Structures are given as structure tokens and as C-alpha cells.
Length: 150
Picture (cartoon, rainbow, N blue to C red):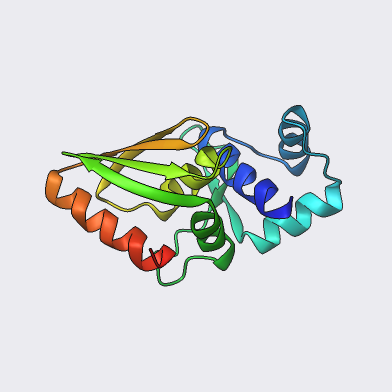
């Protein structure tokens, strides 16, 4: 449950400007995750989230950009545990996941901020990654294979 909650937190802060722990707890609650303020605080610390300024001068939570060498073990575990297979269709990378894990895995891929990937769309067990070129698709596949060991 903790890994799922962490993946959902990454996804939420990637798609919403979340300013407070209370707001994060409310959004998690709306999605069926029960978490106390202490749990949210611990999750923020474990995920190494930071606050950054938005264009309108407000603050929001964000994933610290550490790159793959400093990528938090939890992110890598979500990717490895959720990953099933992948295939390419020109500059689109199709990633198959364990049922129900596509959004979490897509959030991790987005958090990695690889320059080759323009963005990801996730369903229940399938992710479509828009990759900038066919060459880049092969490069991304190699990266994912190194991480997952598959």
C-alpha cells in the first residue's frame, strides 16, 4: 500500500499544484487512500519532495530532479514491480504493466524527466509514451531494460 500511495503522490504532484500537506491528504482521500498528517509528512520526506515557486508566485510540491543516478529507490521499485513488457511503434513506446499499475509507472517515468520523452498517457495496464524520435525510442527502451533487468 505504501508503494502505491507513494506512486499516487508522485502522480498527483505532477498534475496538480499542491501547496499543503492537508491538500495532498484530501486528494489522496478522494482516491481512497487514508493517510494521517504524520503519514503525509513522512511520505514527503521519504520521497524527497521539495517546494518550488509557481509562475504566479505560489509554492507547490515537486519531485527533486535527481536524474537516474540519484533516482530514489522507491521510484525504481515502482517501475520494476509494475513493468511487464514494452514494444515500439515508431516514436511511440508502449509499456505494458501489471494490472492497475500503469498510472503509477507512468508517473515514475514522467518524474525521471528524460529529455527523449515528451509525455505519457496511462490506462489500467498500458502506457503510451510519446518519444521525440524513433532513435530516442530505442534509447529509452535500453534505459528501462537496464532499470528493470528485463
